[in-house]
Length: 430
Image (cartoon, rainbow, N blue to C red; front, side):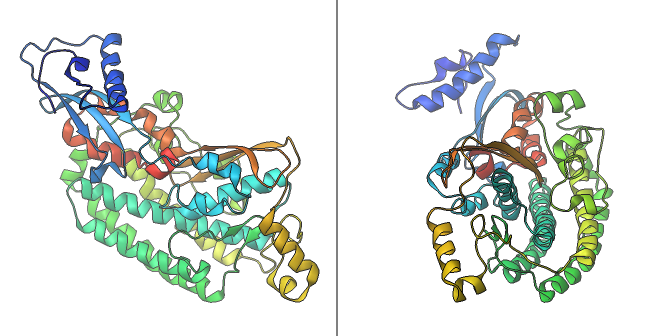
């Protein structure tokens, strides 16, 4: 932090600031060339680094702020600290080998990433998972949506000064992790999806555990909502803070709950149905205010709608296969592998080479993830690995508006603004 009335770039010393740091400050300086700013004769303006090690930035997110007193004058969001080259890694993996990498993107809802990727590859190859597998995927996606929203709720309320909500939401997430453990054998990074279906069938024991959990959970969420509904501190921290209009949300690429909180009715599950979302009834929560409170209310209502979807899925789930019956485009069943030479050969071929889509085929497929539109753009060269893959991550898209929301706000609002967007940097940076 520095205090001076000289231009921002003059504050830098190349001995102490590497090129990347200087480039970020240059972006902050450039903002002053495009808008009028008041003189600062007393040298009261400061440069403040929020992150990348700040616990309220939801990961390694850095925001460089120019402040005057408690007010934010200018803001520059600096992403990329968690960049791992995931899209490039995909070019050197078979389609199935890349599956675990998707878990590490939005690691708060790994199953959603698995499903988005599997659906994209299946569209590329030209296959469709059996209906029971689609139901299992849909159930798991809604559980993942609830899990992600629970962590968002607990951390956002804690950032605003309350601790109890964080403990309650994490208690419920532990119950969800137990369910995923029983269903997939893994609590967190599940990698349960397979191209053409799912790895394991869902047992009656797991279905009963989901029913038992959600019946109690519905009451828990209702009590949390009631607790915050009349909390004056919560209202003052959120109402009218970080307002994003409908036009701004559309032009800057807002997506998911953030978009719907600004009055735009868009949900891929309804407008471009995938899996079995066209077979269940649910409402799209929407608010017109576009502030932090609206984004909170939309996500809370989405939790209730996810429970409503689960109610229907658990009643309608059919019997049947969980993997496509085509050993050249999906893994053969274990019975076929253990007792058939052809099955063993197909298993080796799928593991070594993988599924090979036609050369030159190019597709894009997206789902409605907990944070918004999560899409995979894949182009094939006819081999068992993508020629090119591009991932549309909602966290990255939603961060486009953070600078605009920050500027003119107070320093105390920063953690609430970031929390209301709900970014995960593993997904934003990739």
